[in-house]
Amino acid sequence: MISVPSPAREALERLQAAGFPAFLVGGCVRDSLLGRSPDDWDITTAALPEQVEQLFAGERLIETGLKHGTVTLLLAGQPLEITTFRTESGYADHRHPDSVRFTPSLREDLARRDFTVNAMAWSPATGLQDPFGGRADLQGRIIRCVGDPRQRFEEDALRILRALRFSSQLAFSVEQSTAEAAFALRQTLELVSRERIAVELTKLLCGPKAAEAVREFWPILAVPLPELEPMAGLDQRSPYHCYDVLEHCIAAMEAVPPDRFLRWAALLHDVGKPAAASVDAKGVGHFYGHAPLGAELTRGILTRLRFDRETVRRVTRLVELHDFPIAPPEGSPERAIRRLLGKLGEEDFFRLLALKRADALAHHPDYRGRAADCERFEQLARQLLEQQACFRLKDLALNGRDLLALGYPSGPLLGKVLKELLEAVLSGQLPNEREALLEEAKRRKPSA
Ligand code: ATP
Ligand code: MG
Image 1 (cartoon, rainbow, N blue to C red):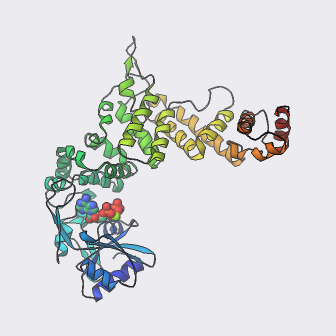
Image 2: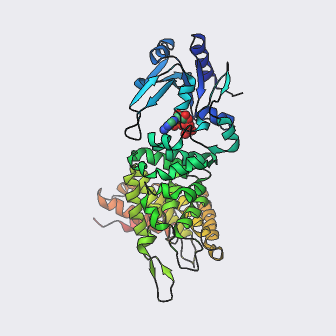
Image 3: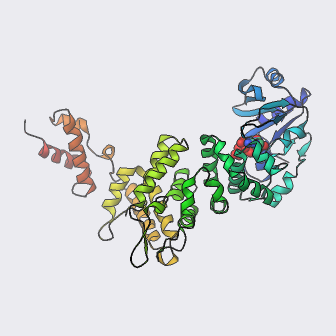
């Protein structure tokens, strides 16, 4: 039995009552059977799109993909994708069907779907419809193509990445012939749009079994991410390391929370190492300048995958700073933490700490001590934040208007003085108190 939200139930009932077989299908059936809460509720039906539109004429409808048979219905605020049973054929571009044909057969509709676990349908009237053994594969935790894997990947190369992505998200293994076909046909990923690749890769990296998926399938991932290739097998020749560069990055990725900026940054944090590698007279490996180099490569990779500017900027900055010491080994770290909090903002500051901690944990077991420093810095930073310490100009207990009121001329001097005052607060020379700052501002005011 599946617990269905009432709008989806109502839509199924109205279709059924009008004489059209209708089922929940795909991800929502899979996730419900797994006891996970589905992201979206998709309905598949024998009704043609015009018939769906007629039946729900009083409701909000969006013609999402009318010629492919998809109408989005908004029922009590819940979006429902209703798609007519269809088959697809002729995938000349390895991505899109050349023709789509509506069919009265549920089985044909399920047969066009990618994996057995995604090819189940359910309705209150009929219960589970599972002609391809999806339920057994759910139980066995297996991703298996519906039909011949080679043919299915030749039809649509994106399915190769979807297989890896679901294995990471659901902690499933990829069935052997499906995995073999994915390896054999990996080059066809070059035909898939970069945006779609980016979406699947990000989902893969944020899944609970991302490390396993990258470890097992990196040669496939290296088609859209050729920069991974020279990382694999690159011996670091260093007592600090027990892994090659790729495995080190995978281990770091495993140790950061499943946040997309962090997972990308962890995977790529040492992408600059192959080009920066050198070996000294004693045979020890060094990677001078690998962080800025890695940042440049990361910017290139993410831009190529058409990520938005903000993502590119943040991930690149994390890679650039991953090797940067948070605080000097001696003396109080508060000042350094305040500065960095001000520079990066709270979110990215904590991301950087998480990345540095994970990087440390991915070193040789004898050299993981820096992870504890990161944890200490994190605690300290949380304390500072609780005390509402001042990190940025906007936190300063004085602003431009105050300076004008003191008789400062308007112009760039205002910003300059505010910055100097912030510096003084950050370094502990001045408290972040209005009176004290006013005094100092008066003292600094140029004589007219
Ligand atoms: P998610 O939780 O990511 O939404 P999902 O299984 O719902 O997972 P969608 O991309 O929303 O994935 O697709 C919905 C359904 O459509 C899938 O379950 C599958 O049956 C089918 N499907 C999606 N993409 C493909 C594809 N490239 N080839 C074949 N079938 C596909
Ligand atoms: Mg979905």
